[in-house]
Each structure stands twice: as C-alpha cells, then as structure tokens.
Length: 194
Image (cartoon, rainbow, N blue to C red; front, side):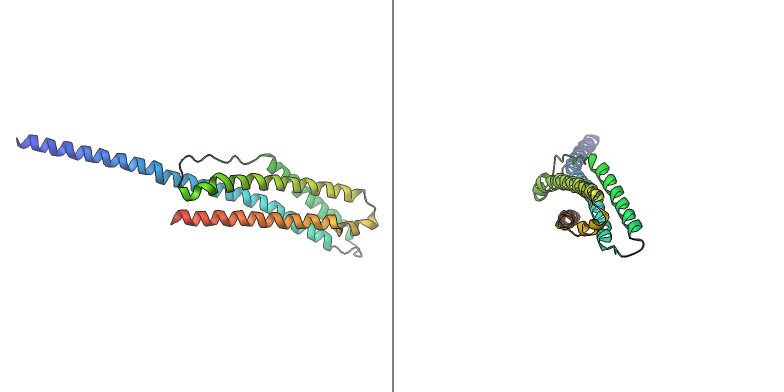
C-alpha cells in the first residue's frame, strides 16, 4: 500500500513535470524563439540599411568636395580627377552591393505590435530604398559621363548646375529616409528588450 502510494505520487510528479516541460517548450517556440528571430531580422536589416546609407554618404561628401574645388587652383585638374575617380569607385561598389538584394526573412510567429512594421513597413522600406539608391547611383553615373564630354571651362559651371543640385537633393532625401527607417528599427529593438 505504501509503495502503491509512492508510485502514484511519482507518476503524478512525472506527469506534472512532462506538462511543465511541454509548456516551457511551447512558450519557447511562441515567445522566446519569435523574439530572437525578430531581433535577428532587425539587426540584419539595420546592417543592410547602414551599408546603403554609407555609400550614399560617401558619395555626398565626395561630391561636395568636388563642387568646392577652386578652379583657379594649380592642382584643380588633378584634384578634380581624384574626386571623380573616388566617386566612380563608390558608384561601382554601391551598384555591385545593390545587385545582390537582401533576402528579407519570413517571420511566421510575431507579436501583433510588430506585425505591421515587420510585414509592411520594414520589408517594403528596404526594397524601396534599395531601388531608389540604385537609381540614384545610375543617375550619378550618367551625370559624370556627361561631365566628361563637356569642355574644361564649362565643367565648373556644370558642377554647380541645377542637375548637380538635384543629385545633392536626392542624396539628402535618401539619407533622411534611411535615418527614418533606422530610427524605427531602433524603436522596435528597444521595445523588444522591455
């Protein structure tokens, strides 16, 4: 009778332990695992956005340096050639990087507060900004191809033309869009840790 009572208690204990472990497993799958996947997705997306933004920022800085060159300087031709070469390299690297698009992962289980951002805004924002970035670098490439065909005296004016200002404005707008999306990612990363 005593051993039968111990067996029943032990059996009950094993059932409770199995149910508890099953509960922990389901909790892990539904909450912890999904948060880890969301966190990883946010980090990878942030990395991709920062890389895109980096190319735009480098291009902007070099472009401004090119515009600021003094045509009266004895080194003007050499400095201009160096800046254009740097811009060509940035363009080439950026277009190579953008040729391999980021594969946004599908997140199956996610809390409701992240659904709209992860499903719509982040994925569409990444795709949209990558496309805008690619178009910008192609436009910039055309701009500098056109610059090479213009005679030396008119190049300085062309660098300060409305077409040039348009490129600078596009760069600024892209940087603002990247910053906005990066701020949203930061917001959700902080929210995820709470």
